[in-house]
View 1: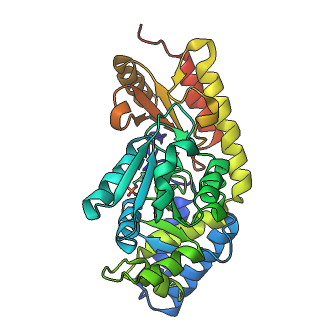
View 2: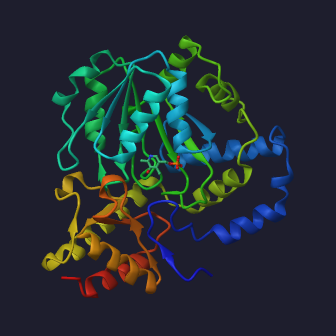
View 3: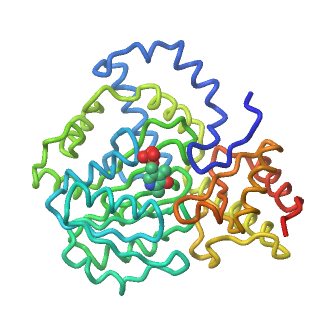
Length: 358
Ligand SMILES: *Cc1c(COP(=O)(O)O)cnc(C)c1O
């Protein structure tokens, strides 16, 4: 047994079913099967169906197994290379996505908004001629989120564009309004509680139709190829069969997303409340309406951040480092489904009980 609990926001604490699921994967023979075999196809199909059911994904949205969220940035960039892309961001991951796209295609524009403010449509005027609007739903670097309601408003205001949403640190933990966007993606080492090395991409019929119309097919992972293989519950390359198997077992064992999401929202609010009592800690996202329910970023002086992480480590709690421009002035706490209530309570009790550096 590991002698620590990981609150790192990815890779994070793995799902408690993992030891059993890994054992089963190793002995049931699936890992020795070819990825065109009927056994693999049955596993992929069942996993896709389970994800649709447990995450309430609309039936007409397709789901693809890919390798990472970073790969999804690349798939979107190259599959819609001639479209103008417009990136709305307030933190490090949204910015990285834009910079990544700019290296591949020059027609990428950014709209930065402050992390302590709500995203406003009035700031997005330039998106009028965008073919793809890129938005980070849960900004892992600063613990903020864009609410479903806002994503829906972006979609309504810019109906022609494809809306692509990075939900890497919320999918599997938050209830997403799938119909309000065309492309959603996440890697599995965050809310799914799995080892890294796989990601999910969820696409609306409109996204696939548009990719087909554009016809960009020069890459093994062009969206057209993903869709063509996905229809047969196959992949463009030999996939992470172990990852798919583990995802299957984790999803079988989990409750529906509404229940999980409500629970995490309550737990995040309670944790934030406890930590902020008597001014002990401060959340980076001061306004609670902006706060993520799955990643908490706690603001402190650099020495205090170092001290808190070191003391937590001694007690067996792995806290997440700050990220990007908040690297030294925050530490982060994952509030992911694989972390038990009991572990979260123990961490909170420890944090409020320790002496702060003054
Ligand atoms: C972790 C993360 C990524 C990168 O995920 P990879 O699996 O490493 O590619 C991208 N976007 C967000 C919001 C993330 O939290």
